[in-house]
Image (tube, rainbow, N blue to C red):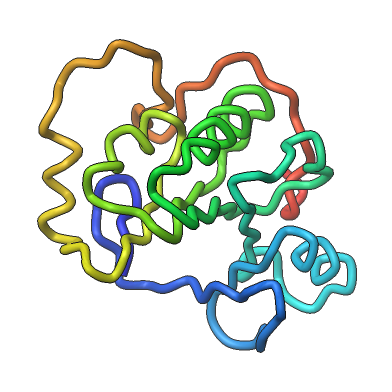
Length: 167
Protein backbone atom coordinates (compact mmCIF):
# COMPACT_ATOMS: atom_id res chain seq x y z
CA UNK A 1 0.00 0.00 0.00
CA UNK A 2 1.03 3.56 -0.57
CA UNK A 3 -0.41 7.08 -0.56
CA UNK A 4 -1.22 8.70 -3.90
CA UNK A 5 -2.70 12.21 -4.03
CA UNK A 6 -3.61 11.98 -0.33
CA UNK A 7 -5.48 8.68 -0.70
CA UNK A 8 -4.44 5.15 0.22
CA UNK A 9 -3.88 2.89 -2.77
CA UNK A 10 -3.66 -0.88 -2.41
CA UNK A 11 -1.61 -1.49 -5.58
CA UNK A 12 2.09 -2.00 -5.20
CA UNK A 13 5.11 -1.06 -7.22
CA UNK A 14 7.89 -3.60 -6.83
CA UNK A 15 11.23 -1.84 -6.38
CA UNK A 16 14.12 -3.59 -8.13
CA UNK A 17 17.60 -2.84 -6.81
CA UNK A 18 20.83 -2.06 -8.64
CA UNK A 19 21.69 -5.77 -8.81
CA UNK A 20 18.55 -6.45 -10.82
CA UNK A 21 15.64 -8.78 -10.36
CA UNK A 22 12.68 -10.22 -12.21
CA UNK A 23 10.91 -7.73 -14.46
CA UNK A 24 7.79 -9.77 -15.09
CA UNK A 25 4.52 -9.31 -13.27
CA UNK A 26 2.86 -6.14 -12.09
CA UNK A 27 4.40 -2.73 -11.80
CA UNK A 28 8.16 -2.39 -11.46
CA UNK A 29 10.45 0.49 -10.46
CA UNK A 30 14.00 0.06 -11.79
CA UNK A 31 17.15 2.07 -11.24
CA UNK A 32 17.14 4.81 -13.89
CA UNK A 33 19.97 3.34 -16.00
CA UNK A 34 18.30 -0.10 -15.96
CA UNK A 35 14.99 1.56 -16.94
CA UNK A 36 16.64 3.21 -19.95
CA UNK A 37 17.99 -0.20 -21.04
CA UNK A 38 14.65 -1.97 -20.48
CA UNK A 39 12.76 0.65 -22.52
CA UNK A 40 15.34 0.55 -25.33
CA UNK A 41 15.08 -3.25 -25.45
CA UNK A 42 11.24 -3.14 -25.17
CA UNK A 43 11.30 -5.58 -22.22
CA UNK A 44 8.20 -4.06 -20.60
CA UNK A 45 5.40 -1.68 -21.46
CA UNK A 46 6.16 1.90 -20.37
CA UNK A 47 2.86 1.78 -18.41
CA UNK A 48 4.12 -1.09 -16.19
CA UNK A 49 7.61 0.18 -15.57
CA UNK A 50 9.01 3.22 -13.84
CA UNK A 51 12.41 4.38 -12.65
CA UNK A 52 13.93 5.40 -9.35
CA UNK A 53 16.76 7.79 -8.63
CA UNK A 54 19.18 8.13 -5.74
CA UNK A 55 19.01 11.49 -3.93
CA UNK A 56 22.50 12.22 -5.34
CA UNK A 57 21.34 11.83 -8.97
CA UNK A 58 22.35 14.71 -11.27
CA UNK A 59 19.15 15.93 -12.96
CA UNK A 60 21.13 16.97 -16.05
CA UNK A 61 21.55 13.23 -16.75
CA UNK A 62 17.80 12.77 -17.31
CA UNK A 63 17.61 12.08 -21.04
CA UNK A 64 14.14 10.54 -21.04
CA UNK A 65 11.35 10.42 -18.48
CA UNK A 66 9.21 7.49 -17.41
CA UNK A 67 5.53 7.97 -16.62
CA UNK A 68 6.35 7.02 -13.01
CA UNK A 69 9.46 8.25 -11.24
CA UNK A 70 10.66 7.67 -7.67
CA UNK A 71 13.37 9.17 -5.50
CA UNK A 72 14.97 6.79 -3.02
CA UNK A 73 15.69 8.26 0.43
CA UNK A 74 18.37 6.20 2.18
CA UNK A 75 18.01 8.43 5.26
CA UNK A 76 15.04 10.63 6.12
CA UNK A 77 17.49 13.42 6.96
CA UNK A 78 18.80 13.62 3.37
CA UNK A 79 17.39 16.84 1.90
CA UNK A 80 18.80 16.33 -1.60
CA UNK A 81 15.70 14.37 -2.61
CA UNK A 82 13.52 17.40 -1.90
CA UNK A 83 15.69 19.56 -4.16
CA UNK A 84 15.74 16.91 -6.87
CA UNK A 85 11.93 16.70 -6.80
CA UNK A 86 11.60 20.49 -7.17
CA UNK A 87 13.94 20.42 -10.16
CA UNK A 88 12.11 17.52 -11.77
CA UNK A 89 8.70 19.16 -11.32
CA UNK A 90 9.72 22.79 -11.85
CA UNK A 91 12.55 23.00 -14.35
CA UNK A 92 11.92 19.78 -16.24
CA UNK A 93 8.11 19.88 -16.02
CA UNK A 94 7.52 16.24 -15.06
CA UNK A 95 3.76 15.58 -14.82
CA UNK A 96 3.69 11.88 -13.91
CA UNK A 97 3.53 10.23 -10.51
CA UNK A 98 6.54 11.12 -8.37
CA UNK A 99 7.14 8.67 -5.52
CA UNK A 100 9.12 9.19 -2.32
CA UNK A 101 10.47 5.75 -1.36
CA UNK A 102 12.87 4.42 1.25
CA UNK A 103 13.22 6.03 4.66
CA UNK A 104 9.98 8.04 4.38
CA UNK A 105 8.06 8.98 7.54
CA UNK A 106 4.77 10.65 8.39
CA UNK A 107 6.50 13.84 9.52
CA UNK A 108 7.98 14.38 6.04
CA UNK A 109 4.80 13.99 3.99
CA UNK A 110 3.59 17.60 3.84
CA UNK A 111 7.03 18.99 2.94
CA UNK A 112 7.61 16.20 0.41
CA UNK A 113 4.29 17.04 -1.21
CA UNK A 114 5.19 20.74 -1.37
CA UNK A 115 8.35 19.81 -3.26
CA UNK A 116 6.43 17.88 -5.89
CA UNK A 117 5.92 14.35 -4.62
CA UNK A 118 2.39 12.99 -4.97
CA UNK A 119 3.03 9.33 -4.02
CA UNK A 120 4.57 8.04 -0.82
CA UNK A 121 5.72 4.57 0.19
CA UNK A 122 6.18 4.85 3.93
CA UNK A 123 8.80 3.15 6.05
CA UNK A 124 7.44 -0.13 7.46
CA UNK A 125 7.09 1.19 11.04
CA UNK A 126 4.76 4.02 9.90
CA UNK A 127 0.96 3.72 10.11
CA UNK A 128 -0.38 4.64 6.67
CA UNK A 129 -3.87 5.55 7.94
CA UNK A 130 -2.54 7.82 10.70
CA UNK A 131 -0.09 9.36 8.23
CA UNK A 132 -2.88 10.78 6.07
CA UNK A 133 -3.57 13.30 8.85
CA UNK A 134 -0.13 14.84 8.27
CA UNK A 135 -1.42 16.60 5.14
CA UNK A 136 -4.02 18.55 7.14
CA UNK A 137 -2.04 19.51 10.24
CA UNK A 138 -0.70 22.81 8.87
CA UNK A 139 -2.65 25.15 6.64
CA UNK A 140 0.00 27.81 6.09
CA UNK A 141 3.23 27.69 4.10
CA UNK A 142 6.16 30.07 3.83
CA UNK A 143 7.13 28.87 0.36
CA UNK A 144 5.70 27.93 -3.01
CA UNK A 145 4.69 24.34 -3.58
CA UNK A 146 3.75 21.87 -6.27
CA UNK A 147 0.56 20.68 -4.61
CA UNK A 148 -1.96 19.36 -7.10
CA UNK A 149 -4.93 21.54 -7.90
CA UNK A 150 -7.62 19.55 -9.65
CA UNK A 151 -5.94 17.25 -12.10
CA UNK A 152 -3.02 19.56 -12.96
CA UNK A 153 0.13 20.18 -10.98
CA UNK A 154 1.16 23.76 -10.29
CA UNK A 155 4.59 24.16 -11.86
CA UNK A 156 7.05 26.89 -12.68
CA UNK A 157 8.62 27.37 -16.14
CA UNK A 158 9.82 24.07 -17.49
CA UNK A 159 12.18 22.32 -19.83
CA UNK A 160 10.28 19.49 -21.53
CA UNK A 161 11.67 15.98 -21.96
CA UNK A 162 10.01 13.25 -23.94
CA UNK A 163 8.11 10.77 -21.75
CA UNK A 164 8.37 7.03 -22.38
CA UNK A 165 4.74 6.94 -23.49
CA UNK A 166 5.49 9.55 -26.14
CA UNK A 167 3.73 12.45 -24.35
